[in-house]
Amino acid sequence: MSESLEFLRTLINDPFGFLDLPIRQMLTDAVNWIAANFRDFSRAYISPPVRGVMNGVQGALTAVPPGIFLVGVVLLGWWAAPWRTVVFAIVSFALIGFMGVWDQMIITLSLVVTAVFFCVVFGLPLGILSSRSDRFYAVLRPILDIMQTTPPFVYLVPAVMLFSIGNVPGLIATIVFAMPPVIRLTNLGLRQVNSDFIEAAVAFGSSKSQILWKVQFPLALPTIMAGLNQTIMLSLSMVVIAAIIGAGGLGLEVYAGLERLNIGQAFVGGIAIVLLAMVLDRVTQGLGEKAPGARHKVD
Amino acid sequence: MGLSGCGKSTLIRCVNRIIDPTAGRIFFKDPDQGEQDITALNAEQLRILRKRHMSMVFQHFALFPHRTVLSNTTYGVEIQGRSADERAQRGQEVLDMVGLSQWGHAYPSELSGGMQQRVGLARALATEAEVLLMDEPFSALDPLIKVDMQQELKKIQRELQRTVLFITHDLDEAMRIGDHSAIMEEGRIVQIGSPEQILVNPRTEYVAKFVEHADPTGVITATAHSGLTNRRRAGCTRPAAGTGRGVWHTRWAGTPSTVEHKVTKA
Image (cartoon, each protein chain N blue to C red):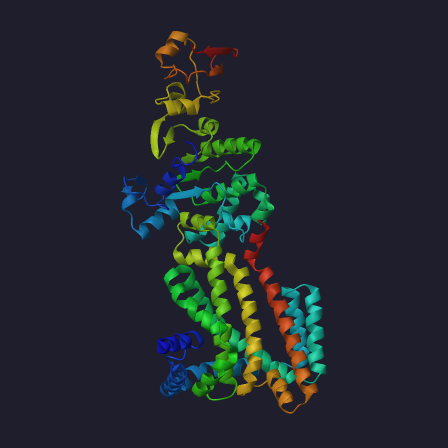
């Protein structure tokens, strides 16, 4: 009698004591196994293209003298964004230059550009596939949830195990972390296109790819640009965190400043990141509003 | 014609197979290949049919908002794979035809409803398809514009002589434009014939009710000797008691001076 009472008490107070799930060990083993078996593959086939694009972008951006860069910003802004955004961009970039972190900003910018490039190259086709197949999206969705919600610090470790340290593993972690919005919003944008327009395209004998590129894609473009905007913002935040595993740029400035308790250095890096983020955000939003499909909103 | 929900739009979409019919067959006389059964076409043949031989006008216009009026107009021609020069020329031709020569560079959102549907019509005419499918094209327009558009369509039709399959729930519209009308009820065609035949000789109670308030102006042409007895013989009687309360104020065409007749049913 008292024995069963005792049992009941443990059941109420500590119902989890009966089973010790060795999940921690299992995950460690799994990651170790992946690292051991795929390290060669990932370093031979995944790192080189990422490094190649990164070096290309970085080379191009560093080759441009800061003065020319500013002129380029004015021209791009002129075409894409309202004049207030142009002024804001110029002031921000000038401030970054005056704070003495121009070179770091260029490195961060090239990391972001590289990450976004890969996010679009993989994310857009995945988004298109998702919009066409419910089953495909049903499989992809939980994966996207995991990619987006796992705290970034967590997959820095596997990134290091697979790709060693430096800019490349930082970029890979960034690409994984920042890709979901492009996929999700491409899928959403394409699905939201009014079926009347698709019917009209079908009635005139359009093929599937003609419907996609002549009708659906342009009409979905504002939504896709919103996804791109989010991806850029996520990349920027992740590129900064990736300083922990040896990525360079403004993130390193912040990280180094914190390590040495050099508050000024850390803050300068932080302010530069904020300014860069705001400029990128405004410019890509301007591009989204300029997209041909944005006329749809007038209707 | 028929009331909403009777299957008109479904029927017209069966003709170009946007909706696949579950039963029956549809024949089309292709000028190149002779008679073919549309229900037996494969996807590729179907696209060719839609590209070259059938075009469509929609109730809510369905103009592509990201394209200019001209580029909307030439959409079908673009799908046909014609050169840019040819497209621009053809586009301008049909825009002239519908009276929108000056609007090529505007966007659909800048146009009024009536003008938008002119673009819809121009887009359908541009491909030079032999068959024009029109799904309640004027229903979303206000009454005055609607009559304008009907006249416009008749004018264009006199020139081009296409086969037009025109869906409407508006009886007067059907009477005004149709040479051959079919009335639908719950997915079936209940009567088919000229507007005059349908008006004068409704075959079921449903049709009779439907045409009860029709304006027969310009539909019924009476000849000089058409006395009451002749009309009776022609079948100008209401089918069932109780439904025949209507009074027709008819201006008979064909008499020297327009005389108002009152035909009252006992």
